[in-house]
Image (cartoon, protein in one colour):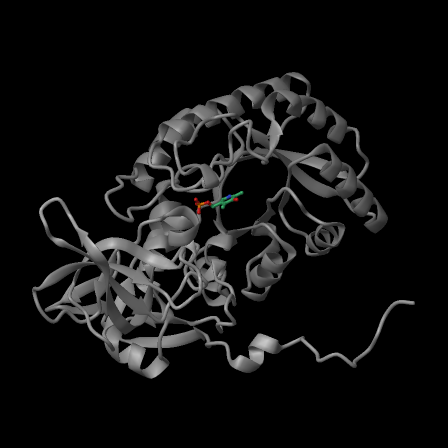
Length: 433
Ligand SMILES: *Cc1c(COP(=O)(O)O)cnc(C)c1O
């Protein structure tokens, strides 16, 4: 359930009509509902009530500090994958003791920054990373708290680009080799072995792959215990999928019940790293129609003798603002912000970027729209703004948070000046020989 609802053909976010916000803020922009963000966080987190757990929001899904601050206020932590995300989480007020650090490529600088910040856990993904972490921690004369991310080789049955727990994926340490790494880590002066983690992929619509990997992790934890290594944390990775179109992902409640049952008799604290399930349906991208155009294929008729035409709706949002359709062929529902008539047509909704791959939807049936109309790209809260770029020198868009009957701009639209910030004309300081 979310708080984007149409009322007599007019799209609302909570008690705010979307169209007047667009007039004031300009388009395109991301619009989030505070009530939905809160509801989704609490629905997920409270589903695990009764067992010792920590919900670490995956910052990469939606990294605005206002939103991180909201989750932190609800008792959440953060799952980060870069020094930049650590900076964001700390700036947002997230307790470092609730921050865990994932990712295959942590630099020395990033490790040092996270050690200085005294985060809860490093999810280490290779032997070389362990050695580097030991070296950096030794120089700082502290101990680094470590979980290893094991790769359980489980098929999450999701999009290939967002599968991470298969042996062929770059992530984690093969579960069969991980034992040696734990033994090695145990003997290291500045490493404190704390947990086991795994993350098998994103947008999962089945519970069974989670349970299959949890079983493998549990088996592994028992083998660890047999060698005298007892861990405090089991991290199960990201959350379940969401409904973009017709997907029927499990409810967090059922997901949590299945996990709780599987965890009976296990004493470790459970860590979860949900991203998409919390923010995905809590945000939309609002865009304005710039042009409509029809391309006819000269001389081409279909078998029924109907002229082949292709209709395009050119909007002011593009693949740099929302990459998912271009990157994964992802589906996002698109609805008019203000519905006008019953007439419908099949169109491609495209952006102004000079790439054929720049589309938000293809062959989509939509109520007829015209220049100046507003469209809402639904379910854009996760991996939307956070994946946006400046490609084609497009300033990144504004982010707006609605709370009841008012809104706040939580990130102002970039300007042309911000596009060239940090760049210089030749003739400045020169380096080299
Ligand atoms: C991306 C990611 C997540 C979040 O996944 P969602 O599907 O958005 O819940 C969690 N943990 C790690 C390590 C990730 O890379």
